[in-house]
Image (cartoon, rainbow over all chains, first blue to last red; front, side, top):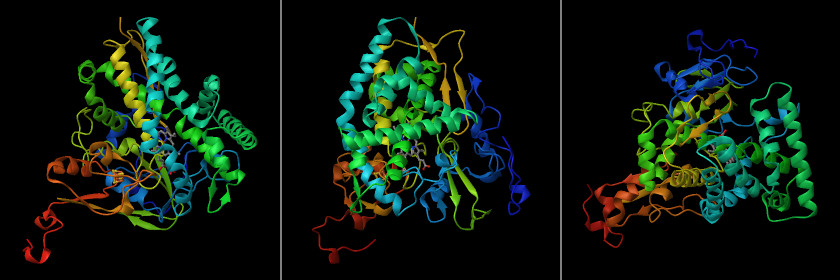
Length: 405
Length: 81
Ligand code: HEM
Ligand code: SF4
């Protein structure tokens, strides 16, 4: 990773050495806890400049306080999300929609998509989600007293629901997960290759649904109208690609971190198993403790922000994992308290780009935990194994082997 | 008690609804309906908890005595606090 020069306008005393990519605890670590490793930034300045804090090695300002992150993410006239991150990996320039559009254009597309994933719509999907969870977990319970939770439950559960929503063939689950993994965690060869594969796939799917629409997301967007016109091919692609990368494995990751926590904290596990009514609140606290996404914005005008001379073109990072450990906002932020009330964490972002899939994600996490705890007796991390957790652009966990023998 | 709704700040997290479904109503896209909310006597605790769940700070609890007045009471006869 090339380390960039610190720009001249950044005062040397505002340069910090923390990075979500290169700091200790960020690379894949057996029994690692990248979220705890991140919390250390609250001992330092509320805003600092990190010289190497994106995947391509660019510097960003790091906003640590939750209240400041809200200000950045709510102020789209100063902090834009138009960065074409996906397309630029291909040497192209088109936005993922709605993520890389700013208001007012953002609003138009967001309004189109909101009803598809609204709280009401998600309530209708609930029986299907629960049935899927029960089938998988009963299969696991019947076949032994140990499993790889990511491979056997979290991915086939969350990814399948998502594929069904998007209208993608379920039997290709492993192919899609592989693409997403290469895209998010691959090297400089695999990443653009995966990006190209995904674009070609989405374009092809759009063409198919245009010819013969069915009842799914892609058919909806190829037929949809905004401002009295059909969407352009580029807009359809921008939405299809975003949905694919934003929704594919995020829920599985969250469920993985949650079950890892419960495996290591038997008391909390017993409490939720014997009082399942607590799971809704507990799931919020686990979302707060183990978020996976950081938000990055680019300044489109100069601003002096809480003492930081942010200049046009600077990148500004608002990492949910940092905001969620802000002692000014959360009492004892480094303690997981499953009955924490009024838990206004940043895991789904703040401002107009608030995660479109948040209602679905929350439902899936709650249902996944409910059905898992109802069917699997006291479980722990299997002796002799160590889950691997990592930081970076998107936090994640692998090799989570649970045992209930 | 009244909840002041800052509609422009609402980003549709639906956390108010999750906490107090009887108090907070969302539109088809999932954003809060415009207009302040007069909260009935029995729902005040739940309503203020719901308001405190809003990640965007779009909901403000107004517990001043004037806000507790029933809508049909003649305002001119009530002394302001
Ligand atoms: C636990 C799981 C998930 C987490 C932690 C998560 C997190 C986030 C975050 C933090 C953002 C804001 C990004 C930004 O402002 O730069 C976001 C946006 C988005 N998410 Fe999620 N997400 C999850 C699941 C999903 C799912 C299941 C879907 C699709 C069904 C989805 C679709 C989207 C879309 C389309 C956006 C862009 C919204 C916009 O720009 O208006 N997400 N997500
Ligand atoms: S919690 Fe806040 S942002 Fe969410 S729907 Fe309610 S008012 Fe809107």
